[in-house]
Amino acid sequence: MRKALAKKLPGFTLLEMLVVLFIISLLLLLFVPKLINQKDAAQKKSDAAIVKVVETQIQVFELDHGHTPTKEELIGKDYVDEKQYAIYEKTKKE
Image (tube, rainbow, N blue to C red; front, side, top):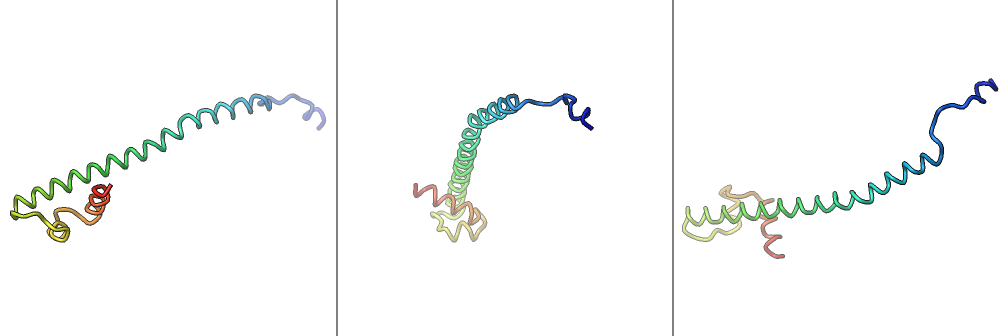
């Protein structure tokens, strides 16, 4: 039993483990903020696309009916859904 414990088993030293953890933490510090900002930018692009769709649907409604639609007319006649219109209103207020 003592001979088995006395053998030098291959493995990592504490210093090697600390160096690896340090490098991984540096990489995380560099890339995590960029990933968070990309999510916000993607949401803004998605909202902008929805606003363009709603504006286009308003123009289509005006061509079809000859007047500017109300919210109920747009949603009721399936030009846009409620979620799209809510994003449109939120974006227009900002």
